Image (cartoon, rainbow, N blue to C red; front, side, top):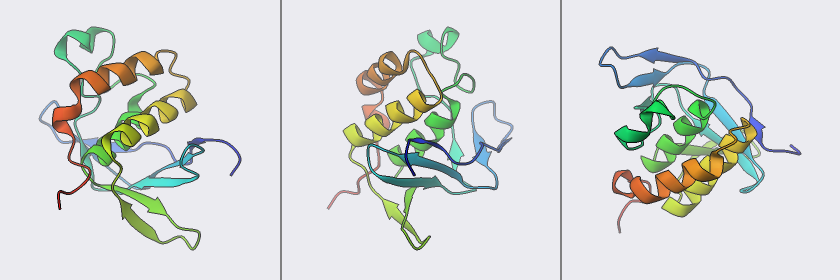
Length: 138
């Protein structure tokens, strides 16, 4: 696969609480040039959308914008629910350290032509760390 990009579309169901959605089939798949592989978010995963300070929601709504698919990949990485697809098609759970999860988020946003991907990534780096659960403690 020559260049980074989403391999599937995002299909979700609203959970009715005004904040959360559940991923439906098919799995959300993203090929990363940065990490040289396919990352997968499995159906059933629940996301609260783009997590950012409430003040920024005017410019960056939680559930809108071109960064929407990227936010799902990032949420899965932050919650330790991101998978990598092996060459044989097997899925293996991966645990990205927080900076790598943020790098993946930025790469995914750039694939969806988010012009402010660098700025959004900085917002997440500044305010998102308290939500990170990706790497289990030993």
